[in-house]
Image 1 (tube, rainbow, N blue to C red):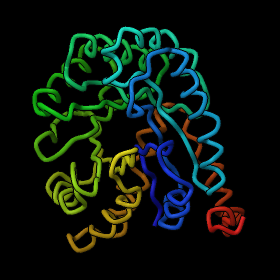
Image 2 (tube, rainbow, N blue to C red):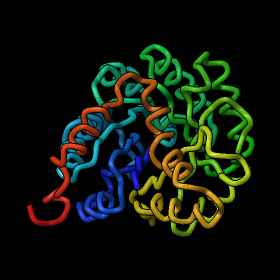
Image 3 (cartoon, rainbow, N blue to C red):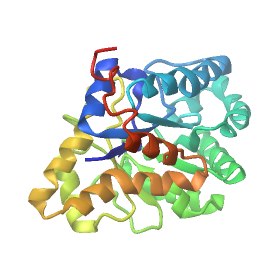
Image 4 (cartoon, rainbow, N blue to C red):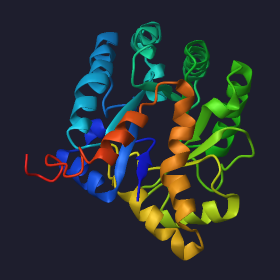
Length: 282
Protein backbone atom coordinates (compact mmCIF):
# COMPACT_ATOMS: atom_id res chain seq x y z
CA UNK A 1 0.00 0.00 0.00
CA UNK A 2 1.25 3.49 -0.91
CA UNK A 3 0.32 6.41 1.34
CA UNK A 4 0.84 10.14 0.84
CA UNK A 5 -0.12 12.03 4.01
CA UNK A 6 -1.13 15.51 2.76
CA UNK A 7 -1.20 17.16 6.20
CA UNK A 8 1.01 16.00 9.05
CA UNK A 9 3.11 17.98 11.54
CA UNK A 10 6.31 15.95 11.68
CA UNK A 11 8.12 18.58 13.74
CA UNK A 12 6.12 17.26 16.69
CA UNK A 13 6.86 13.58 15.97
CA UNK A 14 9.72 11.25 16.91
CA UNK A 15 12.03 9.11 14.82
CA UNK A 16 10.01 6.09 15.95
CA UNK A 17 7.04 7.67 14.18
CA UNK A 18 9.07 8.03 10.99
CA UNK A 19 10.08 4.36 11.17
CA UNK A 20 6.51 3.21 11.76
CA UNK A 21 5.14 5.42 8.99
CA UNK A 22 7.62 4.07 6.47
CA UNK A 23 6.82 0.50 7.42
CA UNK A 24 3.08 1.27 7.10
CA UNK A 25 3.55 2.47 3.51
CA UNK A 26 3.90 6.25 3.93
CA UNK A 27 6.14 7.33 1.05
CA UNK A 28 5.50 11.08 0.94
CA UNK A 29 3.98 13.86 3.01
CA UNK A 30 3.25 17.58 3.27
CA UNK A 31 3.89 19.42 6.53
CA UNK A 32 1.96 22.70 6.89
CA UNK A 33 3.16 25.45 9.20
CA UNK A 34 1.09 25.50 12.39
CA UNK A 35 0.83 26.78 15.95
CA UNK A 36 3.45 25.19 18.17
CA UNK A 37 1.43 25.11 21.37
CA UNK A 38 2.57 28.45 22.74
CA UNK A 39 2.54 31.97 21.27
CA UNK A 40 5.40 33.09 19.07
CA UNK A 41 5.90 36.83 19.38
CA UNK A 42 8.65 37.71 16.91
CA UNK A 43 8.79 37.37 13.11
CA UNK A 44 12.32 36.03 13.55
CA UNK A 45 10.83 33.04 15.39
CA UNK A 46 8.84 32.23 12.26
CA UNK A 47 11.92 32.63 10.07
CA UNK A 48 13.76 30.06 12.20
CA UNK A 49 10.73 27.78 12.09
CA UNK A 50 10.35 28.01 8.30
CA UNK A 51 14.09 27.40 7.85
CA UNK A 52 13.75 24.36 10.09
CA UNK A 53 10.95 22.88 8.00
CA UNK A 54 12.79 23.45 4.74
CA UNK A 55 16.13 22.26 6.03
CA UNK A 56 16.28 20.02 9.05
CA UNK A 57 12.84 18.39 8.84
CA UNK A 58 13.23 17.69 5.13
CA UNK A 59 16.60 16.09 5.86
CA UNK A 60 15.20 14.12 8.80
CA UNK A 61 12.36 12.75 6.68
CA UNK A 62 14.75 11.70 3.94
CA UNK A 63 16.71 9.58 6.42
CA UNK A 64 13.64 7.39 6.75
CA UNK A 65 12.87 7.12 3.03
CA UNK A 66 9.90 9.51 3.07
CA UNK A 67 9.67 12.36 0.55
CA UNK A 68 9.03 15.66 2.29
CA UNK A 69 7.23 18.85 1.17
CA UNK A 70 5.79 21.70 3.17
CA UNK A 71 3.22 24.49 3.15
CA UNK A 72 4.14 27.82 4.74
CA UNK A 73 1.94 30.55 6.19
CA UNK A 74 0.88 32.49 9.25
CA UNK A 75 -1.59 30.23 11.00
CA UNK A 76 -5.01 31.61 12.04
CA UNK A 77 -4.44 31.46 15.79
CA UNK A 78 -1.37 33.70 15.61
CA UNK A 79 -2.83 36.24 13.18
CA UNK A 80 -4.61 37.77 16.19
CA UNK A 81 -1.29 38.91 17.69
CA UNK A 82 -0.18 42.17 15.99
CA UNK A 83 3.42 41.30 16.79
CA UNK A 84 3.12 38.47 14.23
CA UNK A 85 1.64 40.53 11.41
CA UNK A 86 5.09 41.27 9.84
CA UNK A 87 5.31 37.54 9.05
CA UNK A 88 3.04 38.31 6.08
CA UNK A 89 5.85 40.47 4.67
CA UNK A 90 8.35 37.68 5.36
CA UNK A 91 6.43 34.97 3.52
CA UNK A 92 7.26 35.96 -0.10
CA UNK A 93 10.93 35.21 0.59
CA UNK A 94 9.96 31.63 1.48
CA UNK A 95 7.16 30.94 -1.00
CA UNK A 96 9.65 30.81 -3.89
CA UNK A 97 11.65 27.96 -2.36
CA UNK A 98 11.78 24.40 -3.67
CA UNK A 99 9.70 22.01 -1.63
CA UNK A 100 7.04 24.61 -0.78
CA UNK A 101 3.88 23.34 -2.49
CA UNK A 102 1.20 25.47 -0.81
CA UNK A 103 0.38 28.43 1.42
CA UNK A 104 -0.93 27.19 4.73
CA UNK A 105 -2.38 26.67 7.13
CA UNK A 106 -4.49 29.79 6.57
CA UNK A 107 -8.09 30.57 7.42
CA UNK A 108 -10.02 30.89 10.66
CA UNK A 109 -9.68 30.01 14.31
CA UNK A 110 -12.28 32.24 16.02
CA UNK A 111 -13.22 34.30 12.93
CA UNK A 112 -11.88 37.67 14.06
CA UNK A 113 -11.27 40.63 11.76
CA UNK A 114 -7.52 40.11 12.10
CA UNK A 115 -7.95 36.51 10.93
CA UNK A 116 -10.09 37.69 8.05
CA UNK A 117 -7.45 40.15 6.84
CA UNK A 118 -4.59 37.67 7.13
CA UNK A 119 -6.64 34.98 5.36
CA UNK A 120 -7.35 37.26 2.39
CA UNK A 121 -3.73 38.46 2.25
CA UNK A 122 -2.36 34.91 2.16
CA UNK A 123 -4.80 33.77 -0.51
CA UNK A 124 -3.52 36.71 -2.56
CA UNK A 125 0.02 35.41 -2.02
CA UNK A 126 -1.06 31.96 -3.20
CA UNK A 127 -2.39 33.51 -6.40
CA UNK A 128 0.75 35.62 -6.86
CA UNK A 129 3.11 32.69 -6.45
CA UNK A 130 0.98 30.11 -8.27
CA UNK A 131 0.55 27.95 -5.18
CA UNK A 132 -2.39 26.06 -3.78
CA UNK A 133 -3.85 26.98 -0.37
CA UNK A 134 -4.51 24.81 2.65
CA UNK A 135 -7.46 26.36 4.48
CA UNK A 136 -8.05 25.73 8.17
CA UNK A 137 -11.78 25.75 8.90
CA UNK A 138 -12.54 26.69 12.53
CA UNK A 139 -12.98 24.10 15.26
CA UNK A 140 -16.01 25.98 16.60
CA UNK A 141 -18.96 27.28 14.58
CA UNK A 142 -17.81 24.97 11.82
CA UNK A 143 -20.83 25.42 9.57
CA UNK A 144 -20.72 29.21 9.56
CA UNK A 145 -16.94 29.23 9.47
CA UNK A 146 -16.84 26.97 6.43
CA UNK A 147 -19.39 29.15 4.62
CA UNK A 148 -17.38 32.27 5.46
CA UNK A 149 -14.20 30.55 4.24
CA UNK A 150 -15.84 29.80 0.90
CA UNK A 151 -16.90 33.45 0.60
CA UNK A 152 -13.35 34.70 1.20
CA UNK A 153 -12.01 32.15 -1.28
CA UNK A 154 -14.47 33.36 -3.92
CA UNK A 155 -13.54 37.00 -3.25
CA UNK A 156 -9.82 36.24 -3.57
CA UNK A 157 -9.93 35.08 -7.17
CA UNK A 158 -8.00 31.87 -6.47
CA UNK A 159 -9.22 28.93 -8.51
CA UNK A 160 -11.29 26.65 -6.23
CA UNK A 161 -9.34 23.64 -7.46
CA UNK A 162 -6.23 25.18 -5.90
CA UNK A 163 -7.85 25.14 -2.44
CA UNK A 164 -8.34 22.38 0.10
CA UNK A 165 -10.86 23.02 2.86
CA UNK A 166 -9.41 21.13 5.79
CA UNK A 167 -10.70 20.04 9.21
CA UNK A 168 -14.02 19.02 7.64
CA UNK A 169 -16.55 16.57 9.04
CA UNK A 170 -20.00 15.23 8.15
CA UNK A 171 -21.59 18.63 8.78
CA UNK A 172 -19.21 20.61 6.59
CA UNK A 173 -18.89 18.49 3.46
CA UNK A 174 -19.62 21.18 0.88
CA UNK A 175 -20.76 21.23 -2.73
CA UNK A 176 -17.95 23.31 -4.17
CA UNK A 177 -15.04 22.85 -6.55
CA UNK A 178 -12.57 22.94 -3.66
CA UNK A 179 -10.81 19.86 -2.42
CA UNK A 180 -11.92 18.47 0.93
CA UNK A 181 -9.57 17.44 3.73
CA UNK A 182 -10.35 15.30 6.77
CA UNK A 183 -8.24 14.71 9.90
CA UNK A 184 -8.34 11.23 11.42
CA UNK A 185 -7.75 11.38 15.19
CA UNK A 186 -7.81 8.78 17.98
CA UNK A 187 -10.58 10.32 20.08
CA UNK A 188 -11.81 13.52 18.40
CA UNK A 189 -12.41 14.90 14.93
CA UNK A 190 -12.87 12.06 12.42
CA UNK A 191 -12.50 8.33 13.05
CA UNK A 192 -11.61 5.84 10.29
CA UNK A 193 -15.18 4.51 10.33
CA UNK A 194 -16.72 7.99 10.00
CA UNK A 195 -14.30 8.81 7.19
CA UNK A 196 -15.20 5.68 5.27
CA UNK A 197 -18.90 6.53 5.65
CA UNK A 198 -18.24 9.93 4.07
CA UNK A 199 -16.39 8.28 1.18
CA UNK A 200 -19.33 5.92 0.68
CA UNK A 201 -21.75 8.84 0.53
CA UNK A 202 -19.74 11.38 -1.45
CA UNK A 203 -17.22 9.34 -3.42
CA UNK A 204 -13.44 9.53 -3.63
CA UNK A 205 -12.94 12.51 -5.96
CA UNK A 206 -11.23 15.58 -4.42
CA UNK A 207 -10.95 13.80 -1.06
CA UNK A 208 -7.79 14.11 1.05
CA UNK A 209 -7.37 11.98 4.17
CA UNK A 210 -4.66 12.90 6.65
CA UNK A 211 -3.50 12.19 10.18
CA UNK A 212 -2.34 15.75 11.03
CA UNK A 213 -0.44 14.05 13.90
CA UNK A 214 0.48 17.16 15.84
CA UNK A 215 1.75 17.65 19.41
CA UNK A 216 -1.62 16.64 20.89
CA UNK A 217 -3.09 13.16 21.26
CA UNK A 218 -2.83 11.98 17.67
CA UNK A 219 -1.59 9.01 15.67
CA UNK A 220 0.36 9.15 12.38
CA UNK A 221 -0.77 5.67 11.31
CA UNK A 222 -4.49 6.44 11.17
CA UNK A 223 -4.26 6.96 7.41
CA UNK A 224 -3.23 3.31 7.12
CA UNK A 225 -6.01 2.20 9.47
CA UNK A 226 -8.55 4.17 7.42
CA UNK A 227 -7.34 2.43 4.27
CA UNK A 228 -7.66 -0.94 5.96
CA UNK A 229 -11.25 -0.07 6.91
CA UNK A 230 -12.26 0.73 3.33
CA UNK A 231 -12.50 -2.80 1.80
CA UNK A 232 -15.22 -3.93 4.20
CA UNK A 233 -17.28 -0.95 2.98
CA UNK A 234 -17.03 -2.08 -0.64
CA UNK A 235 -13.97 -0.15 -1.82
CA UNK A 236 -11.43 -1.92 -4.02
CA UNK A 237 -7.65 -1.55 -4.32
CA UNK A 238 -7.97 1.18 -6.92
CA UNK A 239 -10.18 3.20 -4.56
CA UNK A 240 -7.63 2.81 -1.78
CA UNK A 241 -4.79 3.89 -4.05
CA UNK A 242 -6.75 6.91 -5.27
CA UNK A 243 -7.57 8.20 -1.79
CA UNK A 244 -4.30 7.36 -0.06
CA UNK A 245 -1.81 7.96 -2.86
CA UNK A 246 -3.07 9.54 -6.08
CA UNK A 247 -5.34 12.30 -4.76
CA UNK A 248 -2.73 14.20 -2.69
CA UNK A 249 -0.15 14.64 -5.47
CA UNK A 250 -2.92 15.52 -7.93
CA UNK A 251 -3.68 18.47 -5.66
CA UNK A 252 -0.11 19.39 -4.71
CA UNK A 253 1.36 19.06 -8.22
CA UNK A 254 -0.51 22.23 -9.18
CA UNK A 255 2.31 24.20 -7.56
CA UNK A 256 4.80 22.78 -10.04
CA UNK A 257 7.07 21.97 -7.10
CA UNK A 258 6.03 18.47 -6.09
CA UNK A 259 9.05 16.22 -6.48
CA UNK A 260 7.85 12.64 -6.59
CA UNK A 261 9.07 11.37 -9.97
CA UNK A 262 12.73 11.07 -9.00
CA UNK A 263 11.71 9.53 -5.69
CA UNK A 264 9.59 6.90 -7.41
CA UNK A 265 12.53 6.07 -9.66
CA UNK A 266 14.78 5.64 -6.62
CA UNK A 267 12.22 3.41 -4.90
CA UNK A 268 11.86 1.28 -8.03
CA UNK A 269 15.64 0.89 -8.22
CA UNK A 270 15.64 -0.47 -4.68
CA UNK A 271 17.94 2.22 -3.29
CA UNK A 272 15.56 2.77 -0.40
CA UNK A 273 14.49 -0.85 -0.35
CA UNK A 274 16.20 -1.84 2.87
CA UNK A 275 15.84 1.61 4.44
CA UNK A 276 18.45 0.76 7.11
CA UNK A 277 17.93 3.93 9.14
CA UNK A 278 14.15 3.52 9.20
CA UNK A 279 14.53 -0.04 10.36
CA UNK A 280 16.84 0.89 13.19
CA UNK A 281 20.10 -0.62 11.87
CA UNK A 282 21.77 2.69 10.99
